[in-house]
Structures are given as C-alpha cells and as structure tokens.
Amino acid sequence: MSRVPPTSITPSAARLTTSLRDIGYDFPAAIADIVDNSIAADASRVDVHIEFNGAESRVYIVDDGRGMTANGVTEALRFGSRRSYTRNELGRYGLGLKTASLSQCRSVTVLSRSANHQRRITARQLDLDVIAQFDDWLIVDPGSSAAARRAAGWLAESPGTVVAWEKLDRVVPSDRPDGGWARRRFEALTKQTWDHLAMVFQRYLDGTASRHVAITVNGAKVVSWDPFATTEAATTELSLQRFELTVGDAVGVVELRRFVLPSRDRFSSTDEFERLSGPLKWNRQQGIYVYRADRLVQWGGWAGIRAIDEHTKLARVSLDFSTELDEAFTISVAKRRVSLPAALRPMIERPVIEVCQRADEAYRVAPRRSRQGDTQPPVTESSSPGTAGLGLALRSAAAQAGEYAALKNILRVLDEHNPAAAAQLRL
Image 1: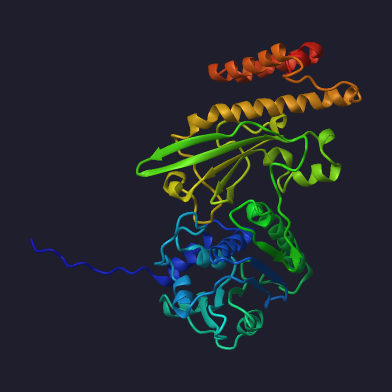
Image 2: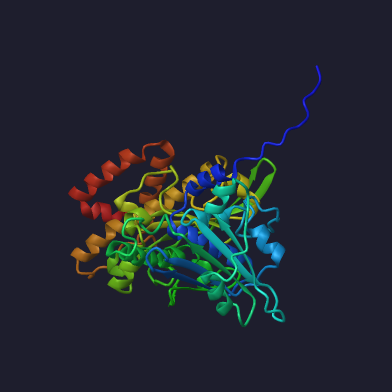
C-alpha cells in the first residue's frame, strides 16, 4: 500500500479567531495581559486610556518600553508567536495580546517605535471583519486612522508601544451605544480595571519585584494593593516554607509565606480594614495567592485543601513558583487560573492548616477583647506557653487524624459554655 503524502490542513482563520474570543478573559484581565507585554518590554510606565464615545469608544494601552521593529510588530500579531520566552518572563504561549484584545474588540492595532534616533512608527492592525471576509490570517496597515494619529502624539519623543482596541463589540452594547447605561458600564469597568491592576501587579507597583513600574488608568495613578497587609503592625507572619518540586523534567522551588491579618479592632484604622478587605471582601479574599514571576495569577480560596470559613477569613498565603514549573502548574492562557501539582499538595497541607488555625484563634480573641474593653491583653504563647501550646497541638493532631471538623464542634461548645478555659487554650 502506497503512502499518502502529507497534506496541509490550515485551520479556517475566520472560524478559529471567533472561537478564540471566548478563551476566558474579562475586561480587566484582558488589560492586564497587555500590561504583561509592556513589562516584558522593560517599560517603566504604562498608561491605560479607557475612552467612552458611544460606538466610537476606544481603549489604548501606552508604554515607554523598548518598542518593536516592523518584524517585531508583525510577529506580535501572529497567533502562536515564534519568539521564545526567557526565564521569569511574563509571557508564555504567544497568544496573549491577540486573545486578550479580541476578547473585547473586533479590531486591535499595534503601533511601535523602537529607536530614539528614528521617529518612524510601525503600525499593523488585526481586524476580525477583514479575516472573516477573506478567511485568511491577514494583518493590514491602518494608514492614518484615529489610533495612528493618537499614537504619533504619544510616541513623538521616545520609543514605546501603543495597543489600540476599536470596535468594542463585547463592551459597548449595539443597542443605544451612546446611552447612559453604556456610559455607566464604562465607568464601572474603569474602576474594576484600576482595582485589578493594583492587585495583580502589586509587587511591580510597590517595587518589591525585580523592578518598579508605574501604571495609570485614565490619568489616575494605580496604588498597589497588598493582600497581606505587611505595613500593619499587628499583622503576623509565620515561618517561611520552601519546597523543591520535581514534576517530570521540571525542577524548581516553591515558596510559601503565611500571614494572619489583624482583626478590625487591631487595624491602624477602619478605612484601612475596609480597603484591605479587597475586591471580593474578607471571606472570599482569604486563601492562597499564587504568583508567577512576581505577577499574581490566582487568588482566594484554599485550592481544595480546606473550605472557606468565616473564622479563617484573616488567613492569606502567598505561593511563588518560577517559570521553570509552568508545565507543572498548567497556567491558563488568560493567566487567571493554575492547578496545584499533585506532588505539592501534601507538602503545603500542614502549613496551610496551621495558618488557618492561627487565624481562627485571632478571630475568636477579637470579640472577647472587645467585650473586655481591651483591659486585658490576649493570651499569647509566651504568656501561657503550656496551655497555648496544648491548644495548637490539639488542632494539629485533629487535622492529622482527619477529625478537625469534630474538634471545631467541640471547641465551639467549649467557647460558649466555658470561655475562660477556651481563652487559656487560645481557642
């Protein structure tokens, strides 16, 4: 039997680009993915402009990074870019700019200047209407479009890149695009974007990452939101945990930092307590915050290790992994979800249970302290080492025996009927 020669089966450009629009982005996450590219281009400043103008509304993301050559701009608009990614670079799949942009709009234009001595700006546009018309992977020169004219102003003095979104069909309603509802939606998305960038790029904004990046949204400087309240004097940090992880050919180190945030009465101010509650508020913001290359990719919840509980809402944990472990964590294209490797779960289970126990204790001490008018300091391990240590030992033993839920019921009854004994045990 003779062999059939290989046959090229290039996918339908119109069909595939339409499918890729629903890969999992919302508006703030899509903006964040473009900011990733700016950080990768060594930008020190990124300005996001979300401009409402009815059907002509536009979004611009402007950076002062190193810019791109004409070939670089073309490659940036290729699905599955051929460029390689260096260690700890925020990009991964070569899809982000395209899938993030087209999740919100039908036309994305990239305009870039790559040299100080040369004022030339390269512009290329990926338009779903053009792709649908020819069913081919086409990009075009936008000419002297509104986006090109705006970019010329931003890039007049120095290198950088502008990403422009037009035809915002996923953002602007087709019915009454100039109406009040559409305007209010833009205002809400602007606020949500500010909040999202403050959380996702916290380490870049406050300089705790490898370098500092300034970000603005419609002229308002984005101020970092630290989920661990490390500037609060009453925040408690437990011992740092490090784990070496080997999954297949991937080898890397995972770091776990554990925090118990103060109860309301121990925060520096009520306003700070409310601000640190986060976009999802206290209960839903508790849990594990997963960072990849200093960029937050998942937050809230305990990854199936335990359930969210009112009594542990003050517990927050950071988990950092390097890009060498990307395959092990199976990070999503939209950089919003990871899967904890099966080999890692038993390593972090006990440290997570411990920080939740400490948060539970802090939560229960706060009401008693309030009832006592703060006339007595809370019992600490140093002031009552025997009983406090016994309480922690009881919780750890119950967790290891799989009887933690039963112990919680016992402790709840003890707290109601004999609060003095519960206080001695720090329960």
